[in-house]
Length: 485
Image (cartoon, rainbow, N blue to C red; front, top):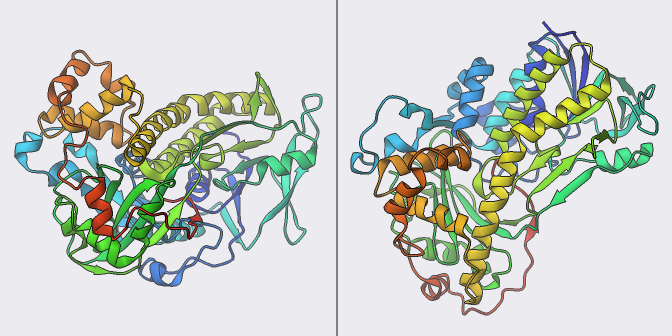
């Protein structure tokens, strides 16, 4: 067992609570501070009764990728069982597709199954499990106002030894973990200590989402959960207890698409897509939620080989977040939490500088490759949507052309289908899949000759006509948010 520490986790969302349980089961004492005061209800009533004001994406569409299930079942199997008991859906896209497309189900194909639920249900299960975990204390309604310092171990580099809560209480700890998400206050808190700023990379956000939730018998799958069309993508995301969401994704610059905020226009437009239209033949349980958001951000607390602070580590979205269109956030966060546990196992009594350097390396190895892959894919798709909107052809991107060929080829080659599902499910990086002997040639053969948008659906003119948009801008602004784990 590793040397036991008192770990202060800032943020009681999914990443913070899952990390807290992993660390507590290794013998650490963990205090979680969460600014939202509301206690988690029973999962059965979480959708209706629980509001988390500090989590803007709380009641918006979410989808857990297969990597999330793999990690949860391996590391916290009791939590996975509790999710199933609460109605979470074990969903296997490959098994749901016709055998003519999949080539039949073989050994190892169960790796593509996921375990998914709406965010309030998922978080209620995790929060109640964390509250019952020996060694974990959760303080709700407790925002962090300042970081406490201890004896510095590097000149001009503050060492964090805890935090001061909003009520003035000082919470001393051996290690602080920032799991406060995309809106992490850590840079401002470090500025207050006189620390050098973290290094950040920020990608422009450009997507907007028009979404509804439904309930009823789960629809039959007729296409991928993410479908690309002229001017929009469509997401059909199954969830828990006979619920699911259906979403249009477009460019935030595409003002005519704002007609989709009207439920009637949204419905009329969705009826034009044969692979998705049957997903709305059910009872809606929300109106149209229209949200836009920032893009991707990577934050480093080690700059030019030197920590800007010791005693605090950034976890999950506080370290790196990806735009929500690919649904990777929860999986990357849990992967990062497992790496944190492994770091503390290996570090033992290592000094804070070594811990900071090791964590930077772990993050570069486990998180950054997925961040880079997401930035490339979402950036290329956004450029394509902008080309649809403006009529100006986008510059040819060979790597994007390969992605499009792989996507189109899934209906022609079962091996290519599995290649795409591996990448989409965070089971293998694109480079790992495409470096296999003959993989690139196989992708080009299966889908290289496909049209730009091979799935059946309207062109831009027909889409706007169905939505009742004249093509004139709709001026009402969108609310900023981030969502879709």
